[in-house]
Image (cartoon, rainbow, N blue to C red; front, side):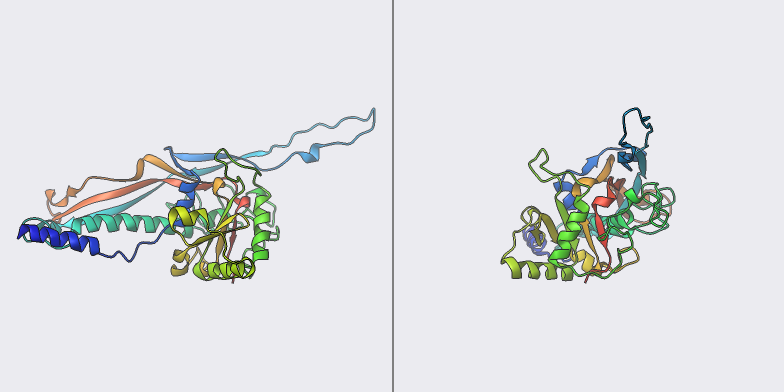
Length: 346
């Protein structure tokens, strides 16, 4: 009987269907370009070039005094380490029903652990996209800085205040299609011509040529919800036939194509979720330069899971076992103007 029970459980486990798992294209992008860095510390400090010195150049006649001067072109952005945890808990029923001859057909303890890990990944994906607002600063928020936080105009980022009207830290703003920094929410079509334009705008700040792995240093990735992705693909195939699959398609299984050197990836999560900061995700696209991003994770809190502890050892506690999945780190962008977030694409 015990052998039959074990065989029944194994068959059930293999046939169990997980219908909630969603892939995370942004995390895959960071992994693909080796932008997940395992280092600890209180904060991450990035030294950035905020200007150029061409205004110091002088044309002169002989015997004319030569000008001097110096322009401070450096600044620092500081990102504090943020902390996240996810509780993993099962109770006495899971223990009783998963031991002995007459066991439950599904290993519920394993299921609780796996769904907790998946839930943590899904929550992290939400943090990557929903922590953008005017009140989110490094000092007063427990949340990870996000993609909208980095690219939304006039929002503080990395401890630097950005104000378009006063020309404060324009070098630290997210890219603007018309380079006027007031058109982020302007309605725009996801046409191939517009995509080429957007790529040109962000690539002005990226180096040309190949990196040490033989990959373009100005390669881009666009994340788009299902409807926008479908429009782009239909346009591309109408003009050129079947379009080239993206590396994200071959390596990670995403529905993705490559146009103008841009990996355009369909994000079902952007379609299903209800908000991107204060704006619906279904009308938004993010055009990202992977090499400008870094997800820094503390080695001591790298999605590590503590051991299960029986809570009932203390008076008044419940008969349950608990562990915690732990993460400490920060998501940073060292060059926001080489990336673009549009909020009204249709």
